[in-house]
Image 1: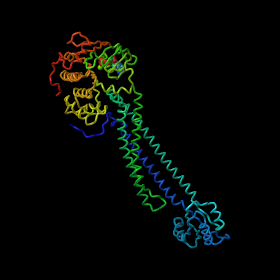
Image 2 (image 1 turned 45 degrees about the horizontal axis):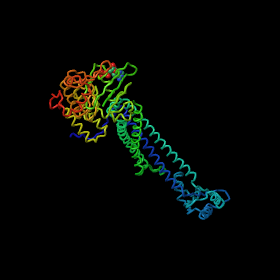
Image 3 (image 1 turned 90 degrees about the vertical axis):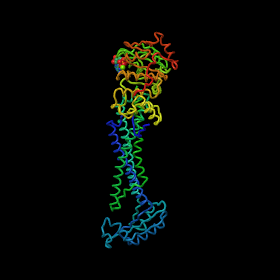
Image 4 (image 1 turned 180 degrees about the horizontal axis):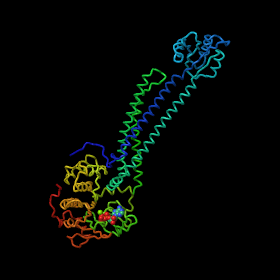
Length: 297
Length: 255
Ligand SMILES: Nc1ncnc2c1ncn2[C@@H]1O[C@H](COP(=O)(O)OP(=O)(O)O)[C@@H](O)[C@H]1O
Ligand SMILES: [Mg+2]
């Protein structure tokens, strides 16, 4: 018995349709964009989370030099502030940063001269909280105990950061939804074209007893194969690009930039992109074929 | 098997192509469908294989009134009908084997059985060396045999052939008709449209003759004018019936 090797076979010559090649490439492009959008959303989420955990649970108190004002010397005011802080509910620890530490923090802005003892340096107190802190009451107490003390509770920073990350995620989601809609429209168009081109063959298949589902399966197999192939190519391109970005971000010394690194589960999410596109194409093709054939006599 | 009552068919708003067609084909019968070119043979066959609905009249197939059949029921009915289309209607991008396999795959036959059955029947019609040939590389006669193999692969209850001998010389035409005879002997109801008088004369079967849109049933010559009812009875009991025309070669294989 002459058993042939199993290869994709369609009763409709869809593979030679002009819409076939174009469907494959469009899917590649869509997979590429969707993968980038998803990766972007995941990277921003990571970044926001790192900032979040770095900033939340901490307060900074700054005691500024006030030359000419009738106030106690900086160090006395810092001591007074520490006393207030250490007895305040919700605060675990309060540590005065040394002159060297402050100089290091200022170095990016002031250069190596930041450690100049002649410069009037503020005192900074790093506060770690272990519960909710009433920032308003704390400000009042600090203000009376240590004039010139300002409390930075990062709340504004955090709120901005969270809404920024949320907006990026929303935008990425919007991009993915738009890509999905474009994928659906492309498949609808390709399938309708295919049905129109191959209408005589479809009618012949019907006359031989083909059900509408049988006909739609021909299209489903075709668009799924194309979507998987196109999606794979698009994903490969996106993966290459992300890897390149990751390498580039590692080369940068500035720690201000987040490292653009995806962890394994995030790569796995990207691997789902071609599959999701193929599934979408399958459902769309079936729906389009069945609906179009329903209206055929 | 098939019953037409006062059936008329018109295309668009033209005059009726078929008028007041009434006849009954008993299960297991063999009929030629004759008539001049343009007489409506193809149109009548299309009504039988459910490609068209009649403009008027009643068509009953396999005991079912076709006016009451819905779109969803059609595939099941059509699978019981094998058709040799006038122009073969082979799919050019599929191999001979895949063309023949279409009805089996539609019926959900397991793939190994599909390949086995199709190879076998293609060998049987003499195309064993052309299983994977595309129709474009086959001669007219070879295409015709692929079309015929496809029409019978599913063991249809009803076999309809539209000028199946049109493209082949009389020698091959004879062999094709012997294949239909084999099926007929196995119980298939056969209707063959042809205007090849020479072939018709070689076989003793009743005729449906179309003339200007009207149909006349002409009984088989060998039985004189006994009429259709007796012809039918003869067919039903034909298992051990030696028919007058049993002079064909014992080996009716193709090559
Ligand atoms: N699809 C169609 N649309 C309009 N007229 C048709 C169509 N098919 C056949 N006809 C007309 O119907 C008549 C019978 O055609 P047909 O059934 O093909 O005859 P035959 O098969 O006996 O040659 C012819 O006059 C033909 O022009
Ligand atoms: Mg004809």
